[in-house]
Image 1 (tube, rainbow, N blue to C red):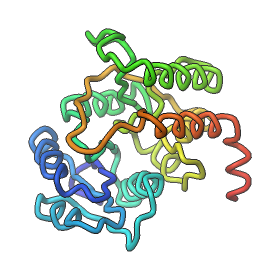
Image 2: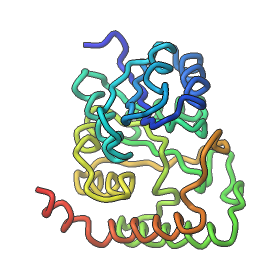
Image 3: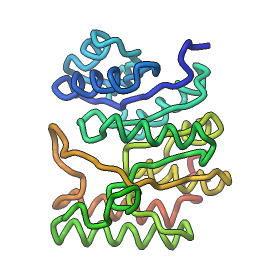
Image 4: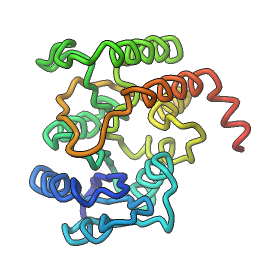
Amino acid sequence: MPDADTVVFIPAWNEERSLPGVLDELRAGLPDSDVLVIDDGSTDATAAVASAHGALVVSFGENRGLRAGIAAGYREAHDRGYGFCGRVDADGQHPVDELRRLLELVRSDRCDVAVGSRFAEGEGYGADRYEPSPARRFGIGLLQKAMHVRLGRPFHDPTSGMAAVNRKAMPVMAQPYVSGAPEVEALLRLKEAGLRVEEVAVHMRERAHGESKLQGRKAVKLVLTVVGTLLFFRWLRRRRS
């Protein structure tokens, strides 16, 4: 059993530039939590940087993609005996203060999973605090409508990479993902499992490096992938099994 009851994992592929700042922020803001980096077959110094900053590291021998990294993070958290698990991305978007709020929600048993949302309102945050371009606004709106239909409830930020979960949710989140939209697939699984999911308004920063998935052709591909996941989720799982 680990000394800490909480681990925060970071899926990372070739993130040696942004990872030090993320790890330093987590260490300062959540000093009693362990940090785990899932190194997705990086060809740069991601694994070495993570180790040098005191993080646990699990390295894949080859690049397997984000969905494998997400599943591995939750699986490691469960198998290592942690009671709570957080997830942030390696690009510096997710402030540790906001992750701490999500962890407090699952610790207090208010929910089994808390997801940080850029587009939800509440907690002093307005719904219009981000002003996406018209193309991004269209893509986001389409995703939101599709999620509302499939989940039977509003969900404003279905591809958010910031989350906190309790031990009950870890095995659900750790199953291999069969679609190209793992965060959306996870929400569908959680609904089927009857677990409590709360979407929480948070602040997110601009990414330190890289570009948004909701731009240009990537935006079209993402929207189509999410809609396909919503429509064919059960069929994909049956095919995989």
